[in-house]
Length: 403
Image 1 (cartoon, rainbow, N blue to C red):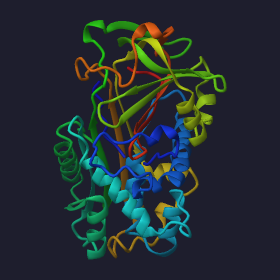
Image 2 (cartoon, rainbow, N blue to C red):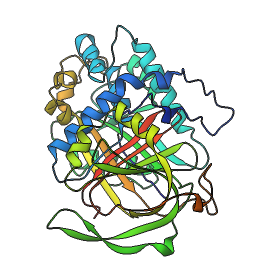
Image 3 (spheres, one colour):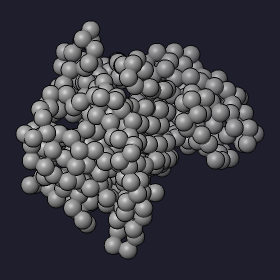
């Protein structure tokens, strides 16, 4: 499979599913590590934001990168002062009496470094960019700290030339993502003086690939009145599967080479909202403990879907607008006001057949040992993609219409 993910959050969990060790034997696999210490608080914010986006866009596709959004907002806190700074971090789910700001930023630094130095089977471009009006000078402390912890690049921009500023931002992101993210901004708010962009491009390979010759055009049932035709990938192999007896859904778990894992969750017809409402650390842990291996005839759409979001508007709608629209962001530049800025998040997902040829699912025994099942992902579904070493969520999505 080819997974391309370009975007902006952190989903981490203490489930046994995430205790699998990294493939690199030289990596410190202690379960006590800075990046994993971020897990308990951030996961709740991740699902809260995900549910908010789903509720605000009924019937539409939703795609976010929990890793990137949390990272972008934590980085932004470096430029906040006083009440604004504390409220932003608390809004991300941190209890500052238990976790210091230094520990938060060190944890994200480890995550950022780990994913930039990911194993050779993955292709990833990950970074942060702050475009600041050329009339403003970033404070040295913010530039140094944001570069140290998050790899932020600060670039001077002429926001009086709106067309030129958009072109500069789009060309920068397109270059950094090797042409995968294009036309990030179609236009800029005429009052913008600061644009923060957090981006990820991720290309993964299935540990057990789909055969391109088995891909066929099939129906996808968007709703009772809408049917679309999509290329449907197919494979038959021993696969981790669960028919949930608690929630109205079934799911499969597939693996990438390296540390990547993906859940495809297929709610029963009309039960998407019920399943999404129940998503939590406890639900994910129960699923991971309940999955069993079956011989699955699996059909998954070959899709390319993107989504983009204004994070400021989202957080305002969630009732925590003061945490990003407050008056004290003097830690970035003395002149900057976040109300005259944009915080941009874009996600793009491609699913295709690619993988390592002749690779077999790790630890699975011959097909004859398993009961045969058929799973058709041919109606709205949920997809979750995560790194099972850092416990970070690379992607959360709801696919209503794959076309």
